[in-house]
Amino acid sequence: MKKVLIELVFTVAIMAAVWFGLSQVDWMKLLNIEEATQNTEERIGDLFWKMLKNTESEITSDSIVVPVDSMLTRICNKNSIDREKIKLHLLRKDEVNAFALPNNHLVVFSGLITSCENEAELYGVLGHELAHMEKNHVMNKLIKEMGLSVLISMSTGNGNAEIMKEALKHLSSTAYDRKLETEADLTALDYLEKAGINPEPFANFLYRLADQTKNLPSQIYWISTHPESKERAEKIIEHIKGKEFPKVEKKDSLRFERVKINLKLSN
Amino acid sequence: MISSINFSYIPSEHELEKASNSYVMSLIAIMGGLPLPIINLIATFIFYLGNLKGTYFVRWHCMQALLSQLFLLPFNSVGFWWTVSIIFSSETITSNYIAYILTIFIFNLVEFIGTVYTAIATRKGTHVEWWVVGGLTHLICKDK
Image 1 (tube, rainbow over the protein chains, first blue to last red):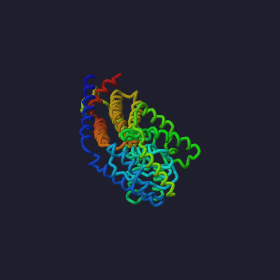
Image 2 (cartoon, each protein chain N blue to C red; image 1 turned 90 degrees about the vertical axis):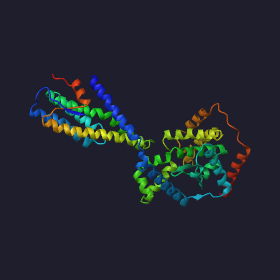
Image 3 (cartoon, rainbow over the protein chains, first blue to last red; image 1 turned 45 degrees about the vertical axis):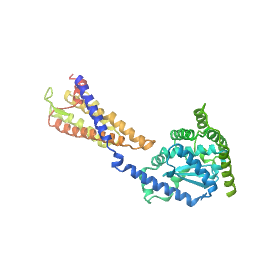
């Protein structure tokens, strides 16, 4: 018995040693997996954005883009996220929706901006989408649901246009799984806290839109695609209980109000 | 890893064939059951049950074939479910994962080659005992 046990332990130790030894090799680099994924992500993200740009109207007015851009920059700077890599796009559309595309394209619809009562609510949404990007949820979702081979074929220009449309629709109008949504929420809270922004309005935003969704489900994509919004809002409130945040600066509120007015005027 | 030892008695031609078949069975099931790591184990177990009333030599080799499959089962299962989690959840491919898959591939290959060798050697009348598994088989399988 003792001999068998010694042999068993010895064999398992050899297996562990082989695994440890092999894991010292950077297989991701050696097999070009990271590079291949990165190239695929870049091409697909740019293709998706091109498709959106051709079908939707992009907002280019500085009076609208610059303030939203500066909000994103604030979150990025306070969280050591490379702002340069994120491409913010504002689209003129009444749907309450914002979503992340591969290769760090962040798309926000005007309908979402106008439905925010204050800038902190928009900070929350931006933080949430930023978290999806930083945690690599976007590509993971695509790979899982479409398969890497389909994505590679898309990125090399051999993809079926219908499949691409379907994939884009999927990314913009369906939620990530519950675990990833929670992770994005918690990461967004962290971003907001570090940027000195009170996450409570973000929770209020979720509450308010969850109620409105009952009447207008098709228009409020960001909520209807993010299930259990009330539950998420409660989690946010629970998370920030007892924490102090600086009060909203009046100039920030005024600037955000001006963005909303400009959006309405430009319609 | 593998050692050839004299068995307690000289088995008959019929026994050699049956004992050798227990290894052949696991080989066929490996080929048919990939990538599920359980199929070959089930096949070997069924073959073992079918030979419960067999001679000591046949039972001994059926048990060794079964235990050899059982030994790698936990490692293969971890690899299988790790792969499933990469495909269906937010897990991503890492160097650690690739190293693990390579490790179990190497050990499965060693086991496969060992099984082929043992099937041939047993058929020729050589009694082969495996490292770890042979000793364990002696503990479990006794001469009635």
